[in-house]
Image (cartoon, rainbow, N blue to C red; front, side):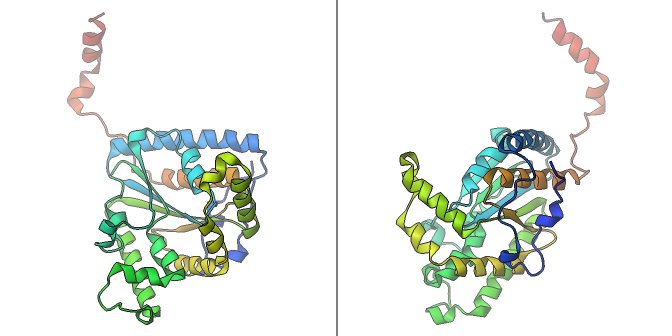
Length: 293
């Protein structure tokens, strides 16, 4: 496998999505990619166990992408080796009436991972500057003071929202949460093929909605909104990575490699040392237990 330079997937200061590849196989066959992922996810699972024992950090993984970009299958395959107690996955849908009665970040805040755990947001707080920007009428349902009509949702409104998101993430980082943000970059043609597959395969029919086709017609608008959101919120302490998503197996390996390489740089995450008294009496404890046979 060619060496993965994780920096090459970092969003740049001017993230025009058309300049990023949508396909990557890392020079490996499907079988080889599957084998590589198996190794990486085992190491990630081991790291999470150490992180849990250490108890000072949490990891938040944010997944965004157009419909059919592979978010669900990536979660399933990359985190398969995790202790189920060590990872929590949230898939954010249309806000409920309860969620709408709070500010737009509330439902994300209460879903954050505890220290020692990984949290995955499958669709994230960024929906609030993506789908709502494509469909600004949704903002009116948030009952925000001073926002009474579409004309009130101006550029200043969106700039404030980007700032609020940056402040939210900065607060998390300052208190021990490590943030990774992945945009699964899918080509329009690959999306077309995946939607057709949902229609052609009976067992996949349930995944299809006519709304997918309506949103597909807004492809360019969504791309522009993603570019703007990435530009405004791509921070050193909460970076965006643009992941080629046309090849699902390659995308999974790249995400797993970025996570593992980045996390292993944190040398202070280690298993805690035993208390001196316990350490001094290990042989005694062993003999007591062995004497029960």
